[in-house]
Image (cartoon, rainbow, N blue to C red; front, side, top):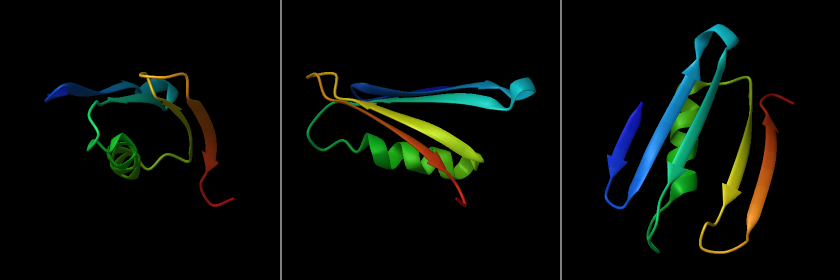
Length: 71
């Protein structure tokens, strides 16, 4: 699934046989809230665990978090 939004996109790639999905929220602009969009999608997918990578593509800031629900 790919959703095109003004100057941005949201892509969800799924592999049901592996119980695996990737989510890409690409936004730009000072008012964008990509983490809020990501959390909304994750809530709907309800994974047992997920890894979140954040990259500010306008700089060199990269952040990675591994989140396990219920731990």
